[in-house]
Length: 159
Length: 163
Image 1 (spheres, one colour):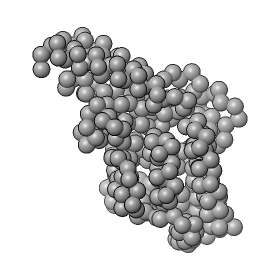
Image 2 (cartoon, chains in turn green, red):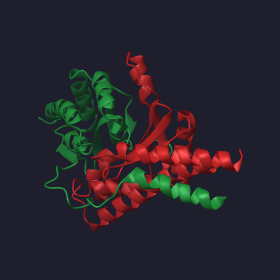
Image 3 (tube, each protein chain N blue to C red):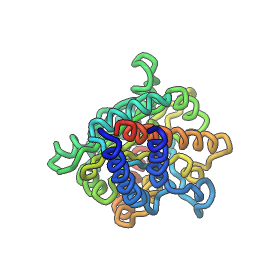
């Protein structure tokens, strides 16, 4: 009885992942996945300015989350690593209809980190590069608009 | 359930996955890992959380994307995102390889698709170039890929074992 289950498992799992021949090296001139920006402000002012910039671009912000939140107890979390998470539900609805797997990249977020030397940086995903992972032209176009908003927000904070 | 019924169900399930599997992993098949189950959404969501923890990950939180969309007046099926990771990896790698920070914590999407439930996660090994990965990071990306595949396998095997 166990034999057929093992055979069935092997059959089921084969198509789910596809091949991996193109991993790690075959993509031409890939875009960088992450953008890193120095903040001219201290940590608190960077967070405040970032939140204001996000909201001014018609995004709704979710409750902030520390980068380590949920991975350790609340007393051990590094509170100088904060992700500001945001969403435009209209864009999200359209994007999920174009590509339901998009959740692997959700939500939009920009993380503010204060390093030990006091330097503050913003870390954002290059969402245009991420959208390319789906090879979906309408999605790429939609994400292009979102990328423009990302760029504007970061420029407003770091200018 | 008698043996004949099990075999018929297994055949139907296999046929469905052979047809649907490639369709959900088309052009971006190297960049995403996905699995499809016939289990109900809530059960699959629970199984996914358990499988992640069994493989040494911590579930940081679960975001109800469907709830947010419904609240804003949009119609959608069940859609949740499980955020997960390992504290020591986040701490170490955000220092040594800060380009990973936007990926942390990892996200596992679980969503309803007609009568099936689909689970998707990014394939870290497919991101090496985009992360300008050095050999150490490439190895870590490969390790995560294998672990993510193991998590998906766990969910699929559990489904089969319950037939």
